[in-house]
Every structure is written in structure tokens, then in C-alpha cells.
Image (cartoon, rainbow, N blue to C red; front, side, top):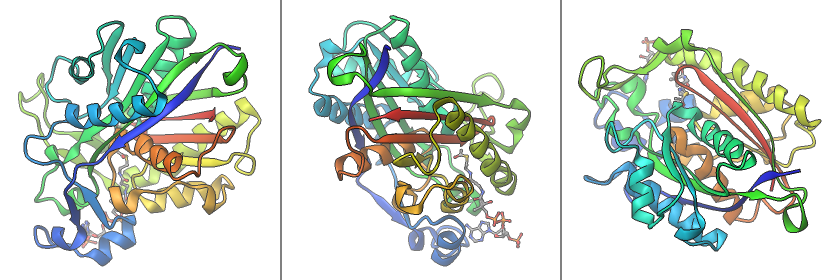
Length: 323
Ligand code: ACO
């Protein structure tokens, strides 16, 4: 079987970190409240002038080095982001140019926090149908730019960063025989669009706008949606919470992660968690967490890895792959 195989990962975080105590000097909040409700202790924030494409290119450079490939080897660049450098062109084209990639396709995917799962599933389809042979799939965000820094109910939750993977068409033989993406499931339900959105944009207000969220409504929906789409992945592959090796969920909130892991019978030691240090980095959170778990030796060749995300739209999705 032809499958798409991850052959390298990389990530990048802006240097500056902001602690909960620092936030409590800007809005009426406390380290206690934020840690208890979300598990977040600090987040990274992009420097002035540091753009999503800078973050994406830095993460992608590291993923390419890990995969041992150069710019001539890549013929697809997909950037999952809701905070592009510009309305157009796609941030992926800026990243492509920056990395010296001169062939193939480049475009952005916009599915908010589910963006990386959507982008990886899209790249997988394109590789398997022969539209491309080797892809850079990147999740990169600068949510600090779209936060309302006077709104304590949202500004404490998010952070900036990026992660990337190199995804290659495996021919189902030799080194890549049983590796790769085994199943992908994507969902959307646009009836929920007012629960998590940005109140601006080129065709509505002509401004960039700020993130708005009904946190409790998102929370209520999240665990059920996540469970549903993971059960679909289990059904398609025969794996279960017991037999997977690693769960790398979107990092929005410690309580959503713990709640869904428990419901799915996934032991806490199999769950990769970075939210306490990164906050919610939207489309970047999964590749950031994945890169960390690969580099510290947790995720190894042959391991079965479950990815899952849910975000604005609502959109949600899951992927199971063998490393
Ligand atoms: N500091 C202190 N108090 C706060 C803060 C804050 N930063 N934010 C809100 N509060 C107050 C509220 O004003 C409210 O006060 P009131 O009772 O006097 O009205 C009280 O805390 C409780 O507010 P709730 O919103 O009910 O708090 P809740 O327990 O629901 O926690 C939270 C809020 C953390 C946002 C929770 O709803 C949540 O995790 N939701 C999911 C959000 C999320 O993860 N979104 C992203 C997922 S999708 C994606 O990644 C794009």
C-alpha cells in the first residue's frame, strides 16, 4: 500500500515568554485562576516584526534538516494558519520562497485549531494520488496579534509558535513498508461559527479584528466532538485507547485533554502535553508537541500515534499514523 510517511519534524518558539503573573498586571486575573481552569503557566509571544512566515520557515528548516532533505526535494508546501502574514498571497508561498523551494505547489489551509490535522490529511491525499511526492506540512501562528489584550476571558489562553513535518510518499516497501498515515477523519459544523471567531476580516469589516469566544460553549462541545472523531479512527484501524502508543492532542486546555483521554481509555503517560508551557498555539500546537516528543525520544519508529484537534467553525479531526 502507498502511504504517506513522516520523515522529519521541527518546531520553533519565539524567544519571549509571558507568565501568568505578567498577564495579571495587564488584566484582572491570577496565576491560580489560569492554572486551575486551563493548566497554562506561560506562553511564547512573537517579537515585534516577527511574522507567522518567520516562525513557519524556522520550524520547516528544522524539519528538513531532521529528514535530511534540501529545497529541491520538496514539491508541496502547506501552511495551516489563521494568522497569515497578509490576506494574500498565502503564507505558504512566502515560506516556499524563503526556503529556496522552486517547484510544486504551495497554499494555506484555514481550519483554525484543526488546521494542522486538515493540512496533514490534505497532503496525505495529494501524495497518495500522485499530485506531489514530498511535502512540508506546517502549522504556524501569531495569535498574539489577534487577541484583545483587554479581554481576560481570551487573552490568557493563547500563544505563538510553529511546528512542521516532512511527509513523503512511501512506496509500501523496504524501510517504509508498514509506516505512515493509516487513517484520517475530518469534520465541520458551521452552525457553531459564532462561538469562536474573529470579529473582522476583508469582506466584512475591512479590519483584522479580534478573537471572540464563548469559552463554556466551546468546552461543552469539545470533549464530545473529540471522542466522536477518535472513535471513528479507532473503528477504521482496529486500534483502541489501550493499544495506541501516543496521544498528541491539540493543546487548548488541560481539562479538555484529560477529559477526552479518560473517556477514551488512554493512560495519562501516553498523552503528550505542552499546554502548560505553550498555551493554545492553534494550528501549531500538534506539530510543536509532536516535535518535542520525537526529539526527547518518546515517539519511536513503529509507534502508533493518534493526533486530534478541534477548533473554530467548529472544525475537528483525527489522524492515526505509525511512526
Ligand atoms: N481570570 C480570572 N477570572 C476569569 C478569567 C481570567 N482570565 N476569565 C474569566 N474569568 C471569570 C469569568 O468572568 C467568570 O466570572 P463570573 O462568574 O463572575 O461571571 C468566571 O471566571 C467563570 O467564567 P467561565 O467562563 O464560566 O469559566 P470556565 O470555568 O468555563 O473557564 C475557560 C473558562 C477556561 C475559557 C473554559 O470555558 C474553557 O476552557 N473553554 C474552552 C476554551 C478553549 O479551549 N478554546 C479553544 C478551543 S478551540 C481552539 O483551540 C481554537
